[in-house]
Each structure stands twice: as C-alpha cells, then as structure tokens.
Length: 84
Image (cartoon, rainbow, N blue to C red; front, side):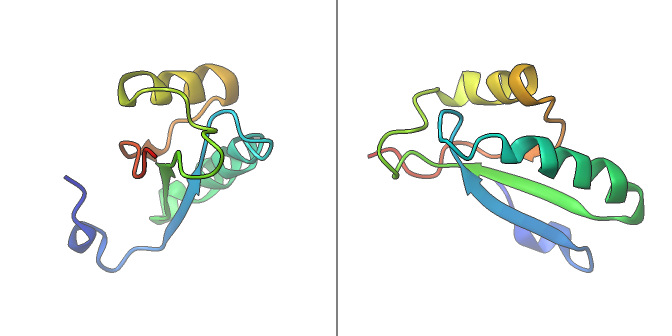
C-alpha cells in the first residue's frame, strides 16, 4: 500500500496514465525528468488508470513490464487505480 506520509519533504510528481493511450509517449519525458532529478530527491509516481475508454488493458502484473519495455520506465508505478 502506498502511504503518502513516506514522501514527506520530497518533491513528488503524480500522474495517471494508460499504456495504450495516445498520450503514452509521455512516459519517455517523465522518465527523462525522473533521471535528471531523482538524485535531488524528486519522485515520479505513475497511477495506471482504466477509466478513460479502457485504455489500460494490461493487468497489474503486466503494466509495469509494458511500460519498461516500451518506454524504459524505472520510476514507481502503482496498481491500476480504476478498472471500469
């Protein structure tokens, strides 16, 4: 379980996304931002979400793998937050 208190005092960028969304290339820029600032304490947290036209067809078990393979993501991803 993600506990926000664990991030107290840090800069945290939180966003929701979906692996097959037309905006999925945003992962590349977010990963670049994370790599540039992670040593200064910045965190990037991705919240995969399936509430926008079923654009997160992956399961919790595969979403991280898909993001790593397709976009080189190394920042933290949570479990899918909405599965309608």
